[in-house]
Every structure is written in structure tokens, then in C-alpha cells.
Length: 190
Image (cartoon, rainbow, N blue to C red):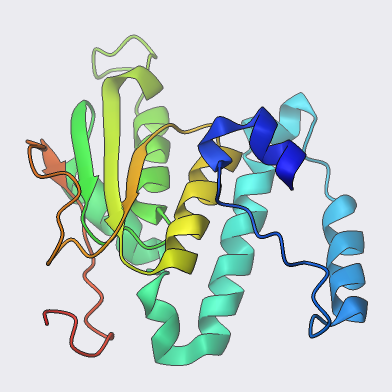
């Protein structure tokens, strides 16, 4: 994990390093490693189809489903995220999510731009057209957000902290604000 973080600065201080803890189910960890290691992620076709990102999103969705209402704290269903992005059409500018969860709004914004790369005057330079800013109060979810962007090669400024009480982007003037506030979290507004 330390070597992955060293070679990928976007993941600095993000990856878990407690995978050897006694309470971790070694059989389940082995099954997960076997399952993931059989997924082709390094080929050009796999990269073009965002296989690793889709697998990551699948696992997030499955985990959120088992968490019930609490899972909404870090995962907004893809159909909701897609609807929000399609409504706002963030072709260019600064995109901000003050409670970004696992960064699904940003991933969908990039997918939206890629899907509309021709015909909107951007000449196919989709990723250079938006800047991503986010904030997440839950430390574990903040780490998920950073990992989600990193595995897709998306750069963004994702801060850790409560945007209601400690705005980490106080001078940001965003062109788009995409958010699904964590209404299921008790006392979210303090």
C-alpha cells in the first residue's frame, strides 16, 4: 500500500494499511483478491470501458445496499447522479460537491462530457474542461472518494471536513454545484 501511494500522489495517506489486522476475515479477503485479480483491467479495451471503475462502483453499490439507509451517506444511486448531471450539463468550469460521498457526481460529470465530446465545441478535450472540487466529512468516505477518482485518472481537490461548519473551499466560485446532501445522517445541519 505504501508503494502504491508513493507511485500515485493522489492516493497519499488514503489507502488502508490495516489489512493484516487479526479481526479481518482472511478467507473473505482471499476470495476478494482472487475475484479482483481475474478482472482484466490493464488492457486498452478495459481502460476504454473503465472496467476497474465500474467494478469499484459495483462494490460500492453492493456495500451501500447492505448498509441500508446508512449506505446513502457515501453512495447516491447512479440513476439519481446521472439525472442531476444531465440536468446541469457541466461541459466546462468548476464543479463542486460539498458532500461528495465517494465522488460519484464527479465520475458521472466526466462520463457526461465524454459522451458529448463531439458537437459541443470542446474538440474532444473533455477532461481539460472541468475542475473538480469536493468536500466530505466522513474520513473513510473521503478516502473512498479519493480512491474512486484516482483509479479513473481524474484529478480533483477533495477536502476532508464538514462543509456546513468548516468550508475547506471558502473562496471557490463554482460554475456548477452537484449535491445530494446526506439527509439520512442524523443532525447533518448541526
